[in-house]
Amino acid sequence: MIGISKLYCGTVEPSDALRYGRQSGDLPSHLLQFSIDKKPVVVWNITRQCNLKCVHCYAQAKANLQENEMSTDEGKKVIDDLAGMGVPVLLFSGGEPMMRKDLPELAEYAVKKGMRAVISTNGTLITPEIARTLKNIGLSYVGISLDGMKDTNDRFRGVDGAFDAALEGIQNCQEAGIKVGLRFTINRFNVDEIPNLFDLLEEREIPRICFYHLVYAGRGSKLIKDDLSLEGSRKAVDLIIDRTKQLYDKGKEKEVLTVDNHADGPYIYLRLLKEDRKRAEEVMELLKMNEGNNSGRGIGCISWDGEVYADQFWRHYSFGNVLQRPFSEIWTDLSNPLMKKLKNKKKYVTGRCATCRWLNICGGNFRVRAEATTGDVWAPDPACYLTDEEISGDKI
Image (tube, rainbow, N blue to C red):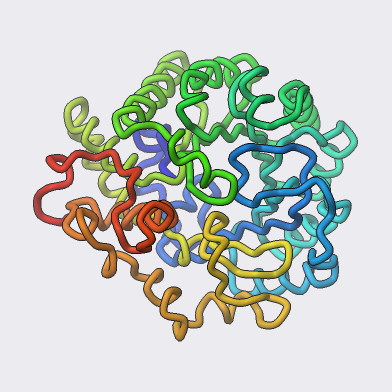
């Protein structure tokens, strides 16, 4: 996760994170990406059931309820364990998490255990009543996915009316006083919608947006050919940076982030070197704190059936099941060769990643994409758009 507004627009300074000792349990949510202890943010796909049919769904969600979902009591035991190991954030996802009737109960339980509870949703099922319930239980944030404006979004989501229903969900959250933001997965069919999403932020007074680079997992694995070209990715990131700066110049300080391609960090730094060398130096310090991709270390995933994954996209390799063994034990068991290597993946990446001068602030980028395209989990990430000239030189 790369904070465009934090880094490029200077809303976060290195001293901000240092003031809290960089311990995840003490850091405010907007500084968590700079934590030193890397206690994992856990994505919990609490259900596989979904009311939409998104073409890029990493969980390959289904319309019908699956028989192997954890019960409410089993879920609470998992939450007890996560709280005990100091997990700072529990992100409820799916499928569509609102399809589970006990979502508010589980989220409230997590909040009472001292964790921040957030939801990743398509937003179409958030009624005014549900929004008020989520506010009352202390939910920290609701991220609502859109893939563009009406026609584009509904085509990607596979259901007519999904866009309008999502906007209603956004409005209901806002009226209930819940912080709400947008989630947008970039590909060649919707990249031209990026300006429209920025316009929507302004019009609807939405404070936050995350732009996700495409990950080749689940149904998204069929979209490899529909990913942006490397040059297209550079242009998209430039556009996101430019539109973010325009907002700040108008006094509208939105939180803008990119996710799932840590080449974005060095790219921002290189751009700032040409524009503002002092800020570039500060950004470098923040990028070192961030440390790049943290799959298997600073982020993990629990599935609806209890299986544990390195992140929400890496669903073909399970480290164990929380119904048989606590997450805290699974996550720290280095007898598993892959888990051990993921804790320090920079030692194992190959090719241009191994000699890249940005390795310490990128972390080798996304291993899932490398494996999906080459069969080798340690090969270079094919979505890295930095040129050979940009990555050459001594390691930082």
